Image (cartoon, rainbow, N blue to C red; front, top):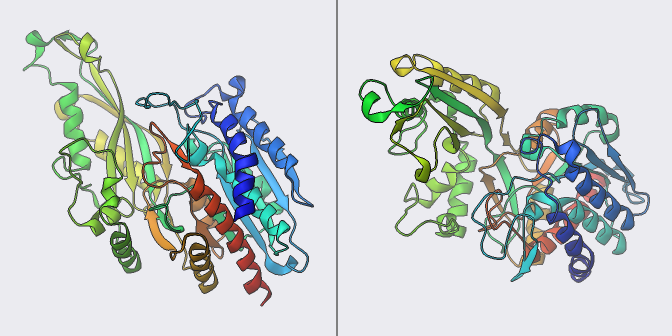
Length: 469
C-alpha cells in the first residue's frame, strides 16, 4: 500500500489536477464537443500519462469511430503462468457532467483544489481517476511480482450522456476484448470510507422533457385566469399520474418490480452498518426529514424503487422578471429512476403514454424522451470473489467488505451483463458520503482512492488462482 500511496501522490494526483481543469463535458451537455476539443484533450492527457507509466507488454490505442466520442483502449498481457486465467475488463470514463451552481467559496468545477485530503473539482471522482487507478493497480502487481490475467482497460467519453456511443465500440472491439471472466467497474459508490464496497445493482433511467402549451402567447393573468388553465397546473396534474405528490411513491405497475429477498437482506445489513449516515450524508436544510423513518426502507428506496425528479424547467421567468402574466407554456425536464430489472425502453413508452393521453382541458402536451437505460442486477457472486473482497477490505481498512445497490445508472454494466452473462462483476468506486457527483463541491477522497487501488490489485491477483486451480 505504501508504494501505491506514493505513486498516487507523486504522479496521479498532479495529473488529476490537470484533468479537473479541462471542461470535458459529455456530448449531451456540449454538442460541439468535437470542435471545442476538451474531450480530446483529456483523452490525450490520460493516454500520455499511461504511456509514461506503461506496464511491460502494454499496448495503448485511442480508437475513433466516425462521428463518435473516442475510446481509450489498453491491453496488458497476462503474467507468465497466468495465460489461462482469461481476461479482466476494467472500465471507466473521462467525460464529465456540467458545471452546476452552488460551489463553495474558492471551489469550482474547473478549479482543482486539494483540501483536507480531498481533491475538489468536476470529474475526479466521477470518474477520471479510474484509468490512473487501473494502471497503478497493475503496476503494483508487476513490482510485487504477483501474477494477473490478461487485462483490457476500456475508457469511454460518453457515459454521462448515456453511453450511446459505446455499443458501436463494443461491437468493433469485440474480437480484441474477448469474453471477460471478470469485469471491474470503477464508476460506482461506497457507503462509507471505512471499508470496501461492492455494488450489487444499479437503477435504470428514463429522462426527457414534458411540455404543456395552453396559449400561443402570454396574456394578462387578471384577464385570463379562471378562463385559461395554467400550464403549470396542468403539468402538475400530469405528474400526479406518475407519482403521489404527498409521498413520492411512483404509481404505475410498469415502473415497479419485486425486490429479490437477498437484496432486502443486504439492505438490512447496510442499514445496520451505516445507521443514520444513510440520510445524514445529504445536505438537508434545517427541519427537512428523509422520506421514510426506517433506514432499511431508505436503502431500498434509492436502489430498488422508482423515483421521479424534475431536474430542469423552461418557460418560467426568474421571480424578479415575473410579471402578472399567464404563461403560454411550461416545460419540465423529468428524470425517472427505475428498478434494476425494469426494461428502460418499455418504461419510456409507458411514461410517454401516461403523460400524453387525454390532456386536461385539451392542452397541447408532448413528452420528448431523451434517454432510456435499463439498470443492472449482478449475477450471483462466486465464492472466490466474495472471499477476495473481504480479504482486501480487511487488509486495507481493517473491516470486512460490504455489498449494496446504487441508485445511479451505468449503462455499460447492463450492456456487459447482457453480452457476457458468465462474467463476474466487481463494480465499485469512490463516490461516498458528501462526494456529490454531478453537484457542487464534488470531491475525490484521496486516501480511499489509494486503498481502493491497492484492493483492486489484490482482487486481480486473487482472480488468477481459481482460473488455474
